[in-house]
Image (tube, rainbow, N blue to C red; front, side, top):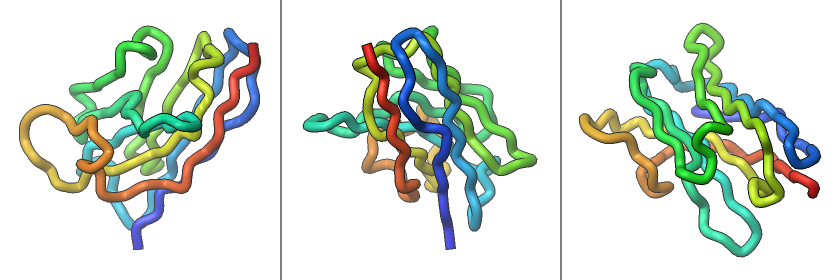
Length: 127
């Protein structure tokens, strides 16, 4: 049974930092592309960052480039999202997801392309 468990969310002031973790079980993350998504109230879920199974390639949505960093620790079977210079517009529920299709080419950045999801962790940035 595959489980992705996010942690590290919370309330932070604008300009602050948080590190989200996604611990996987029942799935070896080193084999798959992994992504972080977020969904703010009343908005669609968007991919904020993704990392190739080889860790050679990463993707960031324009709004977080230079502020967020995705990484993985294969030994711990865990994916991280380091978030810095947080802004109130970063407030959302953040989800970890795995794309187990192993399709060559560009990384998946659409929610429908990911087949396993965590339960989400709330990030609230106050102004």
